Length: 359
Image (cartoon, rainbow, N blue to C red; front, side):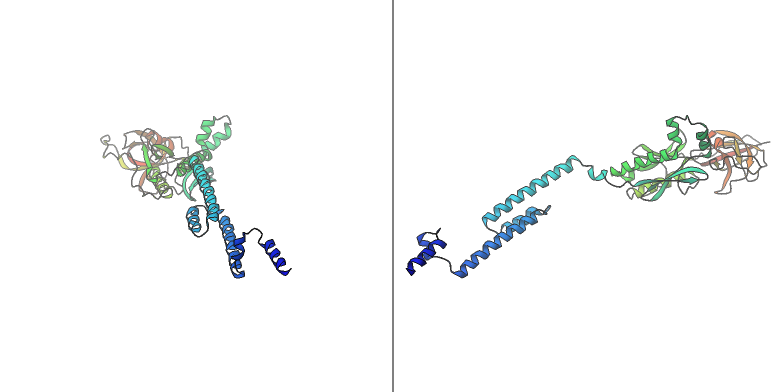
């Protein structure tokens, strides 16, 4: 009876084994070792499948290393996960290839603008990486005109509005930055047509330097302002070397003949206008930048002089009604209208011949 009971128990426990296997059953120690191996394989598979969810760039390399240490069934699960990761990486690569400007579109703009006042008029300064590069001005005359005439065309308003001009230039510079412009292509250029200076990139004009667009710490010389602003852009947008000269800038002519017996002098002339319009001059008049007048350090008030631009031969007759200039070794300071008449407004300064005509 006892033998039959033991045999019955054996069949209940090992019923799925063949008769020959009953005599080759593992010992208790071997059974524990087999159970540990199965548990370890299960934990290994679970752990590495979890890790696979976060593997991106080095996924396949890690998978191959792990697969070499596990059995065939675990290798199959790891291989399947590896294929899914590889497919995911391919989809991501296709997405980036289809949208190559996605990262650039979300980049912070390098050009920003700041509104402020400049000598009782509206002004906007453009900054690159928080460094001031250009200041856009609105002259008092333009401010008065815009108040009186509300029907100004949109084109005229945009050209005179410092905020609109600053936004246009900032947009151009941000676009160039997103396109990884070569900063060595940013140059200062002389425009012979209107006697002015421009900042250009590959022939495209970014900004024109004149009495409305100046260097924030202006030198009162458009040529110097243009060169310094250009070099700031070259450095801030790509670390390019500074330029030493302006492309196409004409060289001064040597001499210009004057009438025999006439009193004359030669030197550097400058001009003034915005910021001084309407103020009292040294002789008590109200300065009008649209009149043909000039400032001289010693000539009597009311003296008429003929000023000739030695770069182009153009002349204008002006009346002395103010004192100056007192800086830069200049001999005469012309009104805005007088400077424009001889093509000196764009360059800011230039060599002139002054012929004294009397009162």
